[in-house]
Image 1 (tube, rainbow, N blue to C red):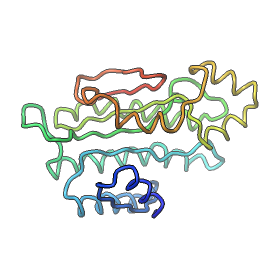
Image 2: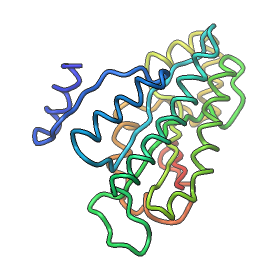
Image 3: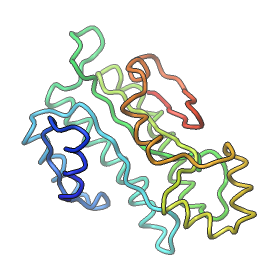
Length: 214
């Protein structure tokens, strides 16, 4: 946790941090994390639901982390944004930071993944769940699904190793031909033009990263 705090402060020295350890698959733990933030800052303008795992024998844990936690996190964030007045409905004076929720899905939610069927199913569900919340924009909360193609992480390396070199090349060819870097994906929510999160529902393709805007 202290390492995380140090990295954040190194990138943005003026930020006030509140690092809380939480098990996203545990309802009470996730609720406590959101409560801690609201108690300290009094508002919530942005939520990035990013926790995820790859295929594993305990498939229920994949669903709990990749899908159920995203749903719960989105509901908690929406409630906090509305209750604290962070969300600004259309027609009201705009806040300095629009209330936005970004749910990380994956390119794996768009096509079958025989080596990771449960993972693929959870990511497809995150996309449709996020798109189904487009109506929240009327209350001032934008819900977006970030769907990067495969990224150079330990999780993806493990999945690719499971299908062999030939299988990995075939998968990459079907999704753009290469791996994104962690930096590319991590910077997108921060540097995508502001209007992406405020215009009407759409699908935006930025260098093999689909962003569904609600």
